[in-house]
Amino acid sequence: YFNSIRQSPSREVKDVSGLWRFRADLSPERNRGFEQQWYRSPLAQTGPVIDMPVPSSYNDITQDAKIRDFIGWVWYEKDVWVPARWIQDRGTRIVLRVGSAHYYSVLWVNGVKAAEHEGGHLPFEADIGGVLRQTSGNQCRITIAVNNTLTLETLPPGTIQYMTDRSRYPAGYFVQNTNFDFFNYAGIHRPVLLYTTPTAHIDDITVETTFSDNIGLVSFNVSVLGSSKPAVKVTLSAHDGRCVASADGIRGVLKVTDVNLWWPYLMHENPAYLYSMEVQATAEDGQTDVYTLPVGIRTVKVTSTQFLINNKPFYFHGVNKHEDADIRGKGFDWPLVVKDFNLMKWMGVNSFRTSHYPYAEEILQTADRHGIVIIDECPGVGIKDIRSFGNVSLAHHLTVMEELVRRDKNHPSVVMWSVANEPASEMPPAGFYFKELVSHTKSLDSSRPVTYITDSNYARDQGAPYVDVICVNSYLSWYHDPGHTELISLQLNTQFDDWFGKYQKPIIQSEYGADAVSGLHSDPPMMFTEEYQTTVLQNYHNVFDQKRKEFVIGELIWNFADFMTAQTITRVVGNKKGILTRQRQPKAGAFLLRERYWRIANETGALPAWARSP
Image 1 (cartoon, rainbow, N blue to C red):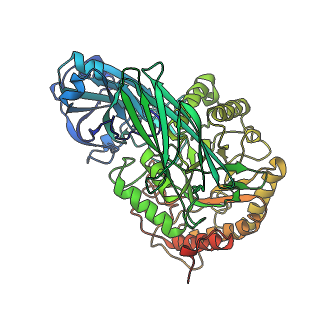
Image 2: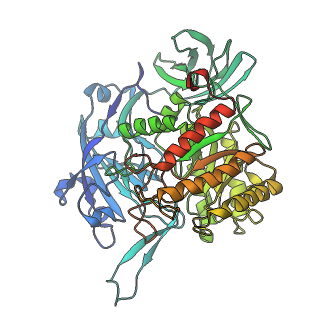
Image 3: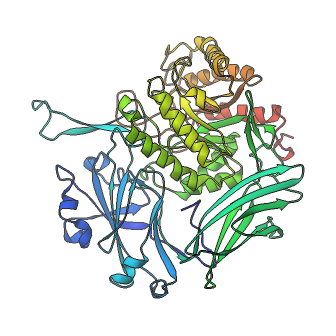
């Protein structure tokens, strides 16, 4: 399931998102649905159902606190009509694809189990043509059971804690504990699609690009299933539809003269240039599958002090984000995506990290088209317990990286993989764990650097020797010495010098910031006011301006927008470290950042003529 699902002359796509029937399994063991085999008959026959929109998190859709905070199995069901010609043509594969369901999923079609998948944030699919042709004709009853329980061996990890004090908690009472600071939204978060391919079909494409002078080189490798000797033709076209290169065979190199490179936003007159690569695979019986892939030609390289895109120094002036919004939770929403990209471009943002999990592939496609650079992060957040460094956890983590790289490897916007956020990397097993994880990721994709984000002590971090770029989170004058902004300069300079002195690798300040409740003001600045947030940022920025002349290659504010968290005494209806509110209204910090990011683009000589002030 490479990259994304696209229509073509040989492929049809039917979106079966919308309103589904829904029930949470509220039985004490959360297991009644499996005991009673709810998938065998329409869900409404075994109990009450409610409407549930897909895609969305189920948590904030109802007025029921039990659903908002539910841990365990929930059940989704939808009846869809499958076009008769799909079923009648036995040369057609019919595939059901779920863009993301959090966390563990089991999928049935017409009561027959079709797939199981562990992990949220990444797609899974099943070939359901056989089931449909054996069962009830064109009607297709899709049932998906989804469980959001997190354990020491999931990604992210968590623990279920049973409360045994009967004077305070009823029998069977439990809570889900996590070590990450965002709400454990659950449900079917991305579109559910039916799509077709010929039996002999393109299963995967890998594209890697480079250039020399004005010649662009696009190496490709095509995997075709269902045919032993397919005839493959690859054609690369420019914006205007002109064919600029073509080749035959499942692997080869396309040469593009007078190449238009893919440049980041604010780095070139013509950023985000995408070619269109059409792959045609024809089987022995004459069946042809066609797939078209956008291709950006660019290079990425890391030195001891710089991050180079197309051999030019790139400075990350960007944000961390979340897939998070009112009502829909982590559910995919096009208006929100477009609004967020408009806000990022308004602020002069050239990059973001997919904190702390892979985002929807539509978001990466949008970044490709707009030239926004991405650090692509897997869900390895909150690995704090030594038991989460065991072999079972590592094996699952390696599988998640395989799924992530397979999905996202062809996006020019993706310039680096992040395998974890703030793990307990000072623990003894972390050295082996991250050495394996980083080397495996590099074996999957040798064209991009690999990192993880640390908040450990520089001298005791076991995984830092294996990464290409050091990414450090620190919250000076917030979690450390709260209220004392006068200490930021000294402490931040020490932080940078310590890390660079030991590892001689470029450094990104991957998180920094302070909570600010929108509309709360004070003079002199006090914690939680907008003035305090901007004072913290300004003190960090003063140090960044010195260190970016040396070895600091980026700064990513935490966070782009306020977002929901679990209910704790440190969070006022969620995290307020956003420079925008959850409704995407700017706080003072957004204007500060906007002025700064446009100035940096100007100073580095990266700002194209169209973007300069008159």
